[in-house]
Length: 226
Image 1 (tube, rainbow, N blue to C red):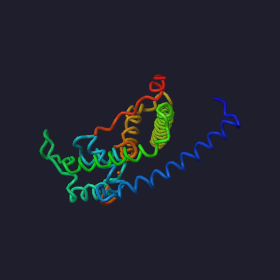
Image 2 (image 1 turned 90 degrees about the vertical axis):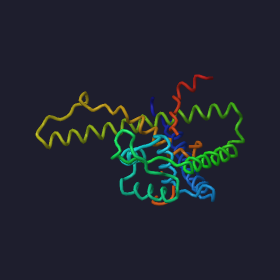
Image 3 (image 1 turned 30 degrees about the horizontal axis):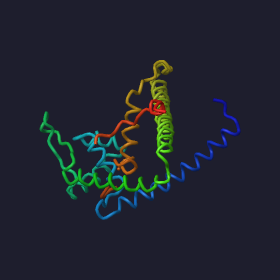
Image 4 (image 1 turned 120 degrees about the vertical axis):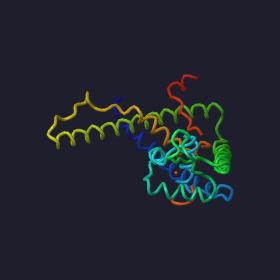
């Protein structure tokens, strides 16, 4: 699509609004998490939702899902265990492998987070009609789809650049576009991370305190409802 001056100005205006929403949303989320009945940090919340999504998982898997280093994640999980929200369990197929899972208290704490978010969203969106809510959902899903695609393309380009650099350094041929590795799991990982972070944004990561992760509907399919 042609980038006209009017379109560029409109996109810049939208970007400014999104930055304001992001900033205010962060403050609102931290306020919600600091409630006495929730009492979590953002990294803890993301970790809890990621564990709930997986059911049980190894720490290496959890680190990948939450995009946190092993050292940082260990501190978060240890605190969650001390607070009775997470437990270590043995792998059913290999007893030598230790995994982490939510306790009943951990699952219940996430329900508090979800309910608090529902209450907040009902208040914030009270001025919207049902038709406006449908349009807003469709447009936001379309934006989210663009973010996933950008993230996937960005990782793909970096992977190809890394592979080219490695090959050239070893005296081998450079990787062509056709030889670029297909990152099948990038959109899924992006959605997983997005939804985990979204835990306090739609009813779904610190050293201390902090469901299946829902698949984001395809925006174009959603738009066809109308």
